[in-house]
Each structure stands twice: as structure tokens, then as C-alpha cells.
Image (cartoon, rainbow, N blue to C red; front, top):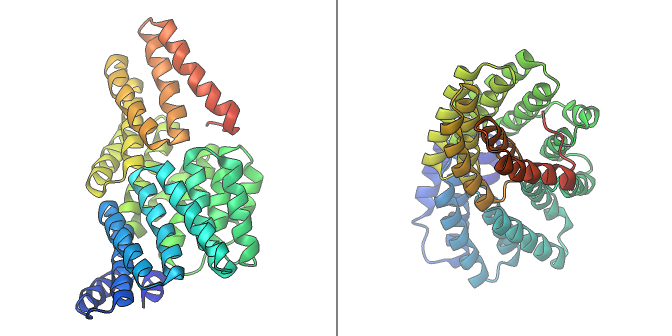
Length: 340
């Protein structure tokens, strides 16, 4: 039932069935399936810590029962859960292990989802060209049917400033999966923001937020509020931006979303700086930099280093400003990132 429940976002029914299945008996593979379902459910409802715990247990049970295909799938699921928690290097390693196991089992039909998740991981790491490669292989293996791969590829193209390619990938309207629709709308919002069409960007992000609230996905709500805040910053509406980032920060803290928590802190510091308090902004930005370095979130490190450089320049410390500006410039040169 798990794929059906996921496809239709039937969260309450899913939770009830998982609780019924937990009393299924001693069958090792069956218990692995229940832990598998619990892990996916925890992830999409915003509990990244529980998602990693249940997925790790499912791997043990699948391995014990000799279900290698399930083990490969759960390695990838665990990688995604660690991505949510902000441990991007561990996430990348787990995804790579899952992909390698799928290949060794001769299961190319199972690779698209794993490649899809790895493309998102590489996107967060600032490895945009590798992200595009994974998304493209995903599309090739699925005969173009993996719609969300187009969203990931579009995000990488957007970060590289290749807006026409991003728009082409987002031209295809998704199906009825509400999680996919949320991702599509947020990608459209970020593309419109980069093109400085702020009303269109806010409209897409607001619809994504509304859908996130309807299906009670804390993860997608947090992501939506971050995107809305970034749009407000670009439109110079700092009070509205700060409100969005404060809400995102609370959600990220509750859900254990390490990357989004660090990003929220970075953008809160940006709002403080734009409101005319460079000293307070610097203090929070330095904290955010430490957090972003810990999760290895590339784009986030670029933005916070650029912000710290601005703070130091404003406070009359050009030497420290140069150090952080150099770090930001190095990321741009290595990744090809084109900031807004």
C-alpha cells in the first residue's frame, strides 16, 4: 500500500495502517516493510530524526532476511533522510551505496528514484553539473516520465543562470501527486525570482505553501516559507521576509531539518543587516556559517560569506571582509553559480 498512500498523500490512513502492521508478527521481512513505511511517513510529515532511525532499522531487517533489493532502496531512503537533517556528505555516500547495489543486482528500473535523490543531494552540495547528469540519467532510464527529475534539473540550471533550459524543464505540468506539484511550484517561484518577476514568484510559492498546509507536510511548509522569504528579500520587503524566515526557523528546529535551519539563520541575519544593524547581523551570520559548513550546503555558504563580507566592510574591517568575500568568490568559480 505504501506507494499508493504516498502518491495520493493519504497521511492519516497511512499512519493507521502502519500501526496495524506493527503487530504483524515475527516475520523479519514483514517487520522491515513496516519500518520502511514508518521511515517514509516520518520523512514526509517532517520528522527527519525518526525517518533516519526507522530507515536504519529497516536496512538491518532487510539485510537479515536477505532482501537485497529492499536494502538498496532503504540505503537511498536513509540518504534522503540524512539530507533532510543536513548531513549532506553522509547522504551522498548512502545514496551512492544504494545506487551501486541496484546496479550490481541488475535492476536498472530501480535506479531512477535513486538518481533523482542523488541529483537533489548534489544540488545542495553545489555540484550543479553532477546534479544535472544524475537528473538526465534518471530521465533517460524512465523514458522521460520522471517528472520531478525535471524539477531538480531546472533548479540546477537556475543556479547556473541557464534560465531558458530551466523554463523548458518546468514547462511540463505535473500530475496529481501533491508533493510533486509543491516542488514544481517552488521551482517556478525560484526561477521567477531570479528573473525578477516577484508577483509571479510569490503566487507560485503561496500556492505551494497552501498545499503543504493542506497535507500537513512540515518539511514542505518550511521549504515554502524559506522561498517566500527569499522572494521578499529580493523585492526589498524586509519585514515580510523576516516573518517568513522566523516561521521557517521554528519549523526547521521542530523537524530537525539541519540544512533549512542553517539557511533560515543565514537569511535572518540578512534581514537584520538590511534593517541597519550590521553588528547583530554579523554575530548571527557567523553562527549560520558554522552551521552551513557543518552541513556542507554550498549555495548557503556562498550567501552567508557574502553577507559576512558586507558586515565587516560596514563595520570598518576590510581585512576580514576580504577573507569571506574570497570564500564566496571561490565557490562561484568552482561551481559556476550565478547569484541573484
